[in-house]
Length: 181
Image (cartoon, rainbow, N blue to C red; front, side, top):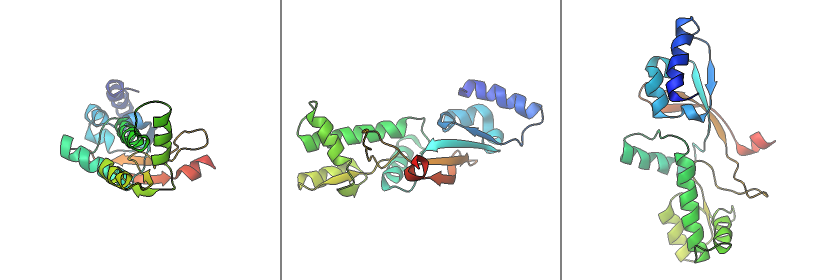
């Protein structure tokens, strides 16, 4: 459901008297446009959002602080956190590999996203340690950037709920290990 159709759907839902019916939406609703399109009454009502989340990580906190300083809100449309993580993992991987060329950069990315290194949550932290020839583990905004045996990243998911100021609070979180078991 897009932001535009959400406004129509929720208008009909409330008109029909189903305003107390809980809704669980995808991470597409984790967007300031959704809040604006349906209004505070709906967004802060029984509407919950399932979203990939790494809320307790330093990388997530850093991302939200940067977004708040730059855009006035930490709530950005998906896939902002995933793109942020990808760019930092790529840059640190290139630094580790000493090149941007494939397949060396792939090995660099896998190395900086390995749990065998010192956890870092920013490019600057990672770059400083790499220059000291230390191993790092980039802990991102969307996940901890640990690749599985298929070289995919599997992250925690949270159920979120909007506050009146367009921020969200976390209702529940399931770890990647819980989801994959």
